Picture (cartoon, chains in turn blue, green):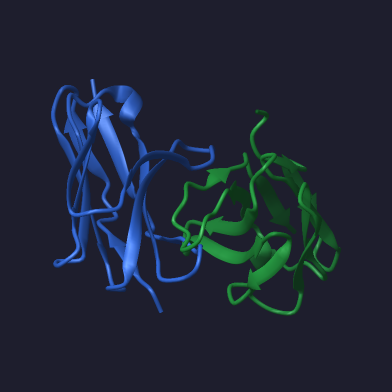
Length: 111
Length: 116
């Protein structure tokens, strides 16, 4: 049974700070890693994907992957109140298309 | 593109009634996924289809749940009979998968189901 663990939070940061979200996964054959953002009452939307070890940057967002430690993280620089949402880590791998989601971390950015 | 379309957006029904949720995936996508989201269990995959064929239904909670995908542009998730514990938000997602998977899944707006 694949497991994806996230700090449940809530995580609260002041506006302009760096928010750090963490995720660990149990299946070593996992190959694809995703961060989804979900606003309250809305559907998840993809914000970052990462497939190889290291960092991947997209605007204010940086995803970090360490397959040896089975760890993936998301950094949000210059956090804005509009970043307040639940962030879901998702992992897929092997020979199928299934995504396994963590339960999410609720982030609140305070003005 | 219109994105993934789900209907109804909200459904309130009484225990024992049949519930049918509908999904239209993004045109050209070859994989479709049904998820259920609750506060307690988070986002759980119920079933997924590839090229209209059910590939993995191990997440379907019990025989009361069934899903079909008669063609590339339509899928249904049916609950019969419904129970209060089925109350949740049900999401449909689609993607274009190549060998090995791992492509982005795009979610529909969800159906909020309340079983009284």
